Length: 190
Image (spheres, rainbow, N blue to C red):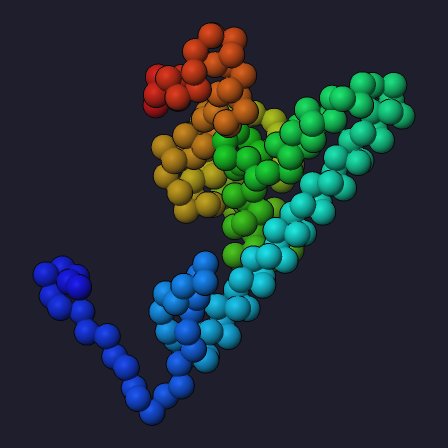
C-alpha cells in the first residue's frame, strides 16, 4: 500500500492486546481496546442522537397536528407546518437575522452582558436603537454595514453578501415562481 508514493508501514506490537473489528460478519481490522472502547462509545452516541431526532420529529408532528385541529386547519397540512417551523428554528444564512446571530456570537466571544455589548457597539457608532432594530429584523443600511464590519471583524463585502443573499427556502420559492430549477437559479444569482 502506498501513500504519496511512500510505503506505509503498519505497526503491530506483539505485547499489546488487539480486538478484531467485524462488519457484516467479516473481520475488517484490529485495534487496541482503547480505540475499540471509543468506537463503541461513538456508535452508541450516534444511535442515541438518531433516536432523539426521531422522537423530536414525532413530537413536532403531533404538536403541528394539534395546532391545526384547534385552529380549524387541515391536519393533513402538518408536514408543511413542520417545515415552516424547522426553517424558523434554523440559524439563518442570509438577511438581517443572520447578522443578528453574528452579533450575538460576537457578544459571547467578548463575554459581556447585553448592556455592555450595546455600549461596545455604541463606541463604534452603532446606537443602541439601531442594535435593537437589527435584532428585530429591520433592514440594515450600507452605512450600518461599515460599522458592523468593525464590530464583527468582517469585511463590508462579506456582510453585504450575508445581508443580501438568499436562503435555500427563498431560492426554492423563487425558482418555482420563475419555472426553473434551484440549481439554475443559484448559478444565476452568484
